[in-house]
Image (cartoon, rainbow, N blue to C red; front, side, top):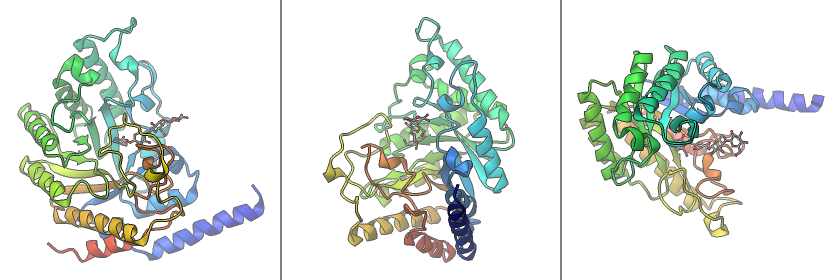
Length: 371
Ligand code: G3I
């Protein structure tokens, strides 16, 4: 690396740290209210881009792995685990004195096909699947025992109409797969908090199904501390009213709430939700802000961020964490979902890793927020 380049990067890191030191952070402003987190990728943990690594360490009080602890990446084959990225991720959080969340133990997506089939490729029996779940959860949770604040134990088990997603888990074990997962996770680390996580939790039918699940798990003597609302939002949905209604239902069900994957896409949506299987054709109409965002749209996005943030503050007695799904507009999954190759602006730091003006507004709001 040329000397000029080293000087430039060092100067940039120093400048960023001086700036960051002076400014209050969202982590500090929300202290005593809720944790403020971010989803991180291995490149950020490994310091590939020092500015991003520095920002993540300074601005946030909690981290979650965007991909490296999911079933497929961490357990690609029955007798092979892939610990490197996950080990470094947990150590990174500990070094920065941040709350570390595990995401996620059981999910119908990003899980190896081997998990559900025998040597002939046929579906395994309920007993075999239950044992494989037990193996996976006790091995992964056991490895980080006492170091993970809480786990997304099961992710996205319901459709928006409140019916159970027809996943391989459900086909082979029925709805009890969820109970088994929570039992195995608690057995492996009795001190870890346990969460059920989903998107579109603001949808009444899905929220009612989740509330029913919470009641069933509690009745079965299972530990469940909170429901994670992913909060992948659009400019017009969900409404503030729908989000608040879901908060009231979950609070009444006796669980706390986590905002686990918050982002607000500024782009037109071919549909609502985060069903990872969806994919749509690229067109210029669906990618209108490649050059810049009209100020009126930017103001609308800022207001929507502040309205939702205000709601999280209003429920800070039950909202324990607010996590944004990606550090910057550079690293967001929304540049390639549900349409590949678009330019979205859904999170708090811009493509130059600079704070967006809405961050200082959120800090002011949090600081002066009195119940
Ligand atoms: O790691 C491989 C790499 O080896 C390969 O070269 C590259 C080529 O495509 O793919 C890389 O894997 C990608 C992985 O992200 C890591 O970058 C997968 O293709 C890609 O599908 C995966 O996308 C992740 C997505 O979950 C997959 O389901 C997104 O980054 C991640 O933001 C997203 O997160 C989910 C939450 O876990 C659950 N809720 C919805 C949310 C958004 O879908």
